[in-house]
Image 1 (spheres, one colour):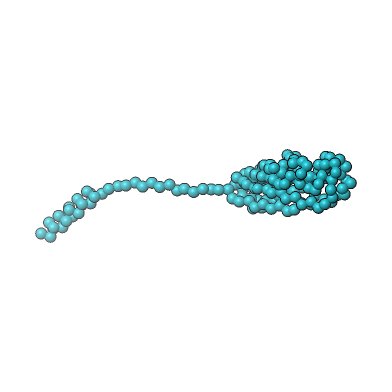
Image 2 (spheres, one colour):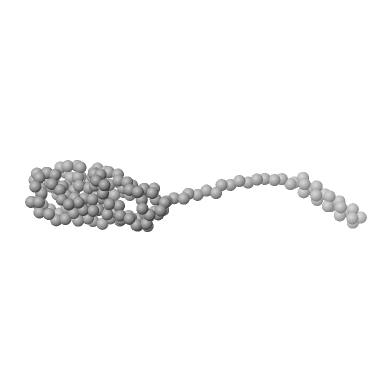
Length: 163
């Protein structure tokens, strides 16, 4: 009797198992983003020099170019292009130049000679991993026949983006 009961239970259990066996496949996606890292930028004040007013003799007279290094540090190798939007206050007499003193504006260019206007100019550079200097240059330019003496302090804003 025990044998019959055991076989019956075994048969009954197997039939329950086969009738309730279902299969299911699950799929999921693994997602994420790999973004280029960061760059850090600094720039210090740049002294364009000290000149006597008599050294400016006519409209268009210029002085020596002075480098404006924009320093990057810790630039990730995945960053490929540096975009700099440069703007500032224009000279009262000639809006192509940044404000200096009356009759003297400040000319700003990329190192390659592309003029940077106070109203806003975009300058692009190929990124260099690690540390690098991205160069601009500036100089005084006479914008009027009559000039005034005085201290020059002209703020230039650089908005840096990169990809």
